[in-house]
Length: 345
Image 1 (tube, rainbow, N blue to C red):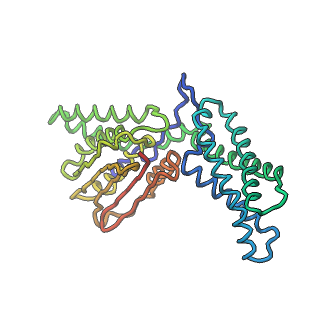
Image 2: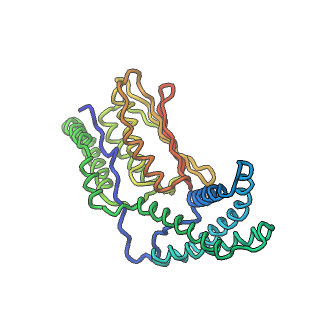
Image 3: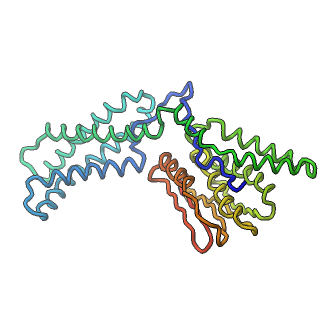
């Protein structure tokens, strides 16, 4: 069989909440850099539109925007600081409590913005009520948007999602592995037994529900089982080099993130070439960031490239878990395909 791909587009549905937990998922995590960035850009965009009213020329618009920013930016940062400070308390409350807290903080931020503008002499009679209502409405829109993003991370139609993922699993890898085992049964029964054990462990891991994230160490162990199976198929054509940093093993990743990348390296690097390919998997912790790389040589004349489904799958799930703190890059250069992932430690 020429297409041993399986699991490249396999994702696990989100795990149901465990009993006994005292915290719930936050609607908005104001300590998250992605939330901070979105909140500031959203408020600045609204201020930019508001500054257009009463501005006769671009210079006047810039001046009005600067004045509005002088009040809105400190108020927005205060909103984020207070929400971040209350993070653990909000976690112990139900999700219904997150919305009113965010809205009340928004009204408070509006009053603070008005006080800042009054302090620098922008207005003689500060519009306290209008500023509070404006802050309230902005926080309603912001919290609602963050709530929609939270729902996107945990789809409600779990059963339908699982059915879709199960339908996309392709059995070629299983068939090829069993064929390899059959070929080894008589000549090298010990290898055949080890191969079937690796296969059993691999599918046991795939079919269980690990939840929203797993550790890098668990992902590496799964990739090692997969490569041990493929080593039997390809022999010396598959040459693997590991360069792992133990300090990076506890970083959190979406489940089944590393295995599809390794499988792509085997499919597009080893399988099309009679000489095989070299695969290098590395991890490194640099301060508060962990870098993971999967590199494989690509034979000349390998034919048409893939559709990038597995890479898109990995990129999307990484973004859902780590947002702007996660980085994913992939590309082919000088006959070497490289995938680099960076996540917060």
